[in-house]
Image (cartoon, rainbow, N blue to C red):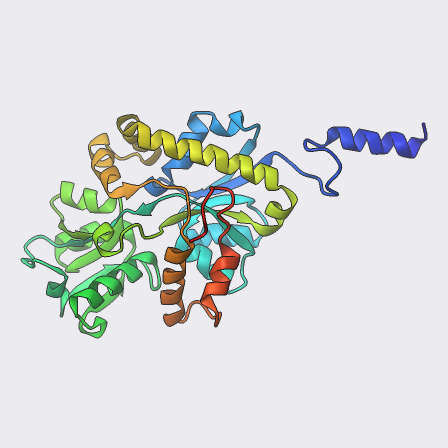
Length: 320
């Protein structure tokens, strides 16, 4: 046998998926996620229950990010293969060509609320007219939720003073009366209620049933080179999601360990979060349309853009 042939055989033997694809396929996955985010609990469950290991994966945490744009910047820099991240930063970076990624699974739907300050005696969204309402960022899902709620209530957004406040600062701002209301994700609404800093006016589930929230995304090149690895990762994610839904009390205890919040908070907060893994192209496109109106998404054909961004084949979804 020639030296060249021996070398070729050695290389093929070292590849985990064989040498027929022309790529160096791997079972190593560099992962990112948002720190202490209850919406991304499936990642923690999959890790702690060994679901990734069961799928033969070597999952390596690049880091726990404090914000979605920070995580998406890591994708842009080629530091991540897969990650759990909010829909807003994922769509923003993809639409503006700052990251080449695909959405391959949902992490959760719903899970946000409009919370009003103590003493604000209003019965519905119409009462927000003339008030100061905080959102975590322009064109975020919470911004979308607020605009949808105002539209359904017949309130012109121009009649509301909408400002940006970081979620950790919203509770203190509500308690002090600096803002009248805030639109934010769990566990902040539950924390606000527990600390007597506010009350829930309406949940996002009532405003936009099953609206998308956090996603599982993958670097497009990594997906092309390692489709079986991505399939295995999503299989572990699905196992974790099903485990959460079948074991609510244990999952709440795990959320306590994941977030550092007391179990009295996580158990209540989880009632407002739907853990689901099949992404809805239709629901995501509705949000993309909003982002286009806001000037974030530049693509003329939002339907085509959304179809190219979302891959439901790994979750058994129809793509609708």
